[in-house]
Image (cartoon, rainbow, N blue to C red; front, side, top):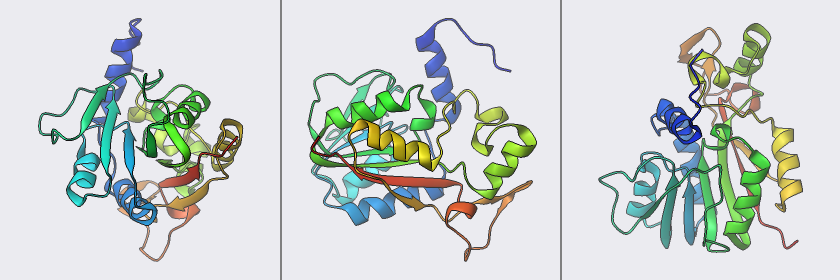
Length: 227
């Protein structure tokens, strides 16, 4: 197992670097689908922007009026200057951004953070009234993930090399409860409809299969409620 440094900031940067700031193509395809459905996106925060690839696409497609990215990693050199970058540990609040955003987009980030309820309260603080949250995370209820839990004692995206990048596994019911507790509407769930076959992860399920049992990733869309 990886040796843990006692410097928390260094440890979190190391964990973030293990993921290389990127996500699976199926995750991005799912996020693109939902962003297109939910447009106009207005003022947008990409919470956990990694290499900035998704933000660049949003900027090129003019899907958002303004874009701010936040990540523990440094600003990418080739990011358009119109996109503001905040380098910060996302386990802590982003200061001076209260109620600034119409949309928060967070692709494969919540599983990297220590306290999902605190993060969702932060989302609510950052959103304007009625603002929406689009969030993706590994799907713990796929056949592959459930079989990994039985055989390897953890979900598929939290085994071996996924640690310490992935530390927080959330089931759909967890996400429903977190939304309810932190002032969001009941979430609508969507699936990547792309999943690797257990023990043969170079291969994916046939394209006609999808949904909860055959998708490696899921997304939720929820809105900030009035109370």
